[in-house]
Image 1 (cartoon, helix red, strand yellow):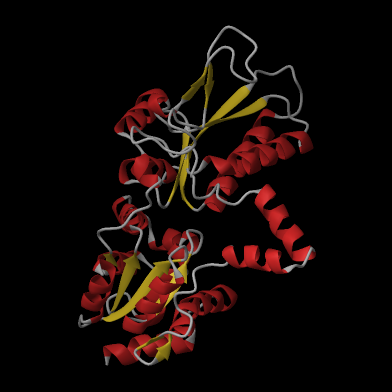
Image 2 (cartoon, rainbow, N blue to C red):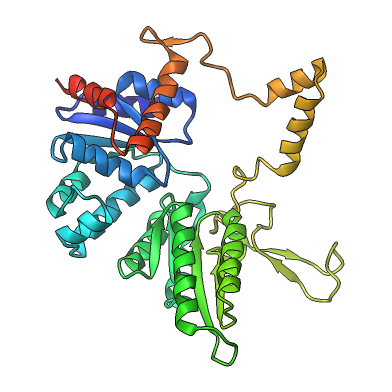
Length: 363
């Protein structure tokens, strides 16, 4: 209800309005949004390019971009654009690094016309604690800092400040991975081949979910192996507080010595986050695993009435089936923002249909 009210109020404004909604929202949220205001979905990888292109096509001073429901990501987008202005990026750099049709003036207008939903955040990313921020600032001043767009303000600000000097990155998980790969490749070239030289250790603060460490380790190993470099090491540091670390005591399974084994990620209460800090593991991202996938495949291949009933339980909620919103099919309304995003990713511009909807509503 709060989100619907925010959308209705945003749509009543004098400016043209486009709603950019995070892809992870429910189909029901997308459907309701589409019935109120022209809506396009986004991911953390394409949200910046989406708002830049929308602003270019419909005018940075005339278009209001309503972003939700993830407040952290919306606020971080505004902070990112503000940093571009405050740090003195030239028009040429903006055109080269952000969008070829933007400059300082249009970026400032875009920043001022982003309307962020004020009351939504990821329950997992909300768990960073002040102790984590203090540790990063005090003990890892020389480390590269990465942060996902959904990470809370202070952690994001550290990475954002670092990113302006190419000592960090903010963005999606793919942006983070690409940054780490590039830094390791640069270090491997600088150090050169051989084992007689002094080793160089790169430290990366990983401000996102720990599940991507597998792809990071694999990629770093491939880079170092392919360059025959033995003098570069990459250390990945998870920003979790001490309360977010689980201790495995002597005598427990897998522990054969007399010391306590500290395990990260994990919290004393079980797998997941602690309110004291940490985004080491996201319980929602761990809901799908290989065992579950294998079970589904087995049920599909071994067709039976019982298996069909079990498979039905894995389907998403069917609340919109047969429903209409303002006389329109609810499922079609929910799918529409996804179609607009796919068109944008394919054509690199917003579809004429979406632009016409925005323009007609303003008129």
